[in-house]
Length: 461
Ligand code: PLI
Image (cartoon, rainbow, N blue to C red; front, side, top):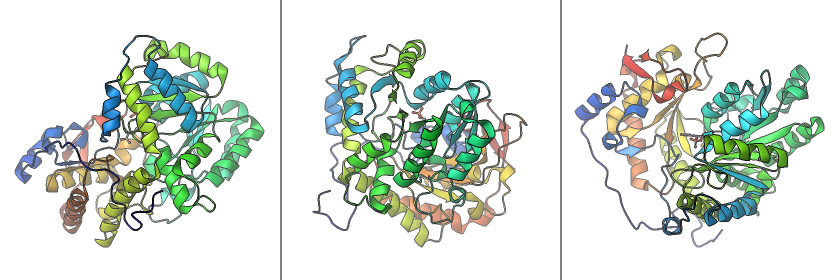
């Protein structure tokens, strides 16, 4: 890391092009969110001022990535951009084989179908929506083995993404290793509030699973952010670069699914990467059915080039320090305002604790969904529900899953917004917090079968 800026997270870039956004009135926003069924996913982006829905595919590419688009080799087979991407993945992440996919869930689909059989169980450090659904659709059952602290928004434990090794041992004892195709380990646990796993814990998990011949599949969507937190907080890693720590994380695992739309700062893309030759062979067979030929897998050549460049940029210490620094700037402002958020502050966004924010709204009236709608009405800031709506229904009983965490995620796209935008967001959240007593819950009036949070519709109760 360069030391020209010692005490600030200021951005290591300057702005070359801008995209105007629209300012709207409160009346306009009240109409817009009603028309969207109080679901921020159903708003038109034209009606949004500061878009913190997601950090997925919303980052600003660098001038080098844009230049990379011009080097697209759009041959159907054997594009040179594929080989460049393959070499980059191997150099920075260390995985032997690469199968490109159109985005992360494409890779999740393929690995789940290859590795999971009916009746299997898949332990993991908290669920992610699409990952869990693909595991279930392949016949598996997800079992949460994350440390208890991850479910407590006020626990200050530094590595809330850690696995509880006793829980892992219990899963092995209960089901037997033959029913565990792999352990699903995310770096930067999204649903826990963007919380990191420590390398010490991952190495212990590696030792335990190795004893039973169980593989580890890594959801490496935000691995560089996790590596930065290890550098900052884990004993013994202060003098290692984010790139070195990223590689060390990947080396503990047997394969990975990647949504390149996050860490790697492309607008679309992803991949499956594995070390096992046989799994690779099957994955290459499957990718041609669902994604595209194995040398493009749903991505254009130019997208693979931008991705290869984005991977290199994503592990630069100065970049990641500014990226996480901006998230922490917003988090610290909200803490100063006394707003309840998940602590410690994570790396890709701030998560409002809707239970504590709206204690008078019961979980079956969707407090986080209602809070996200109010925030939009107040300032045009678009956030996302990460609570009971996202958790879906229990596959066996049909009841809502009631997660301990009922959160609203303010997700920060990379290299897109300024410190002044963060101030507007913080002030708006504080204003909604001041008027919180008047906020009422919602009822669900339309519920899609899969991943309901994307398209569900609500009305005010
Ligand atoms: O959106 P995809 O299909 O490229 O990736 C799915 C996916 C997998 N794992 C994790 C940890 C994710 O965060 C993820 C997608 N996340 C989205 C879209 C988000 O808004 O967080």
